Image (cartoon, rainbow, N blue to C red):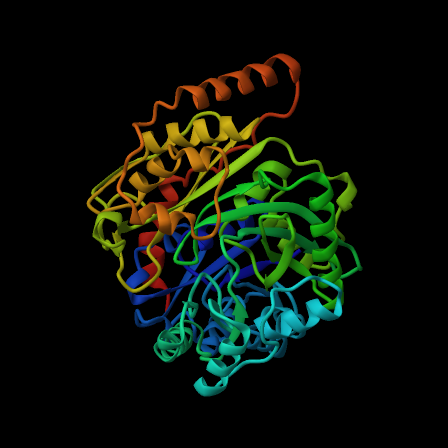
Amino acid sequence: MFKKILIANRGEIAVRILRACRELSIESAVVFSEADRQSLHVRLADEAYAIGPAPSRESYLRIDKLMDVARRAGCDAVHPGYGFLAENADLPKACSEAGLTFIGPSAEAMEALGAKTAGRQLARRSDVPTVPGTNDPIEKIDEAQALAQSMGYPVLLKAVAGGGGKGMRVVNKDAEFSAAFRDAGSEANNAFGDARLYLEKYLEKPRHVEVQILADAHGRVVSLGERECSVQRRHQKVVEEAPSPIITPDIRKKMGEAAVRLARAGRYVNAGTVEFLVDAHSNFYFLEVNTRLQVEHPVTEQVTGLDLVKLQIAIAAGHRLPFAWETLTPRGHAMEVRLYAEDPDNNFFPSPGKILSRTVPSGPGIRLDEGIYEGWTVPNDYDPLLGKLIAWGNSREEAIARLRRALEEYTVTGIKTNVALFRRILNEPDFLRSEIHTTWLDELLRRPRTTSPPSSTEFDAAAIAAALFHATHQAGSAEAPAQSAEPSPWRAASRREQVDRQP
């Protein structure tokens, strides 16, 4: 196993990774920009190194600075987390040249699958169904618009190096195309340093279902089951759950086989996610591969009992996966909401500022992955994700009931958060019946609130019945996965001194 890992990221995902390192008795080194000097990941890490000014292009996106820190800190591996350079093939190349192990796929696999157009080409060669669209990047507006006209509106412009809804635009008619193409390209360039776009047919009201895969260097590739990620705002996932309420065992098997087949074709190693769109007739279409750890990985961990970050590290160290696909039986249901420092009543504008106080939920089936603390100032320079609140239950109904309760317990003062949005979503009849799709939330937010307060008697009765059933008929079965440990007070105090001593 590794001696010391450089965590090339920030925020809650950096905290998530360094906690896994500590449990594995591996030292961790983190980097921080000027805006993140007092961040939680800096306080918790064994070592922390300044890496530059607040703008990510001058700090977290500087591969040369990361390699310099890895050398000075004596690291033997690098974990990219998600976002920033996590899907940039130049980072694993730089690690290889520096004699470091990259905890993720090879640069070749990343280029074969991570680039959206290359992934589509490989999917078609691997007999994985794809959404109609282009196989190559389109750089000229006129050429792209002609293709959109021949394909028929609506169409979707997507960034070749994209993710998280960045560099993506739905175009409904000719008059919108030029502006959408320019805006998507500009946003993609700012987010990923790559302005290239491709075109795909826009499916009406599909569901977004993704399959988590793991692959080791010894030829074993496994599917860990699917996640439902259809509740999205402007193509950004907001609520995720596992398993998907609409996926039957037969479809799960077919999707898992397609994901594994694609990973094998791309010679993929480590953790990855194959994303699909599912139409009203349960037909699924390949969307893209995320060649990294996903934000929503905790819901898969909760229903499988696995630690994906530890498995990533073990795979990178050359270990074999200790299980086969057929041995995995998901247990219960898990649901995650993404907690943001933003104001839903003001067009979801970011809400940076000092956190004056906070109360965190606990109790059966509740997990909170976050990167904040009382007294910390949320910067305005990065994505405003504060953390993720995850609930596990024996059934979907029980998971929702627990998540409702946890959201009532969760409070943060000093900044605005999107907690009220989740309380609304969890009370919507369509959501409770799982009658959702990728534009469902956008449509919900455009209409006035008409639903009653969260007292849904029929749903609450179902949750109670489910809990009683499992208590009666599954006595002695596995309980909900364990909670993440709280940070040690002495560690927070000691980091204040250690950070100032770093170069």
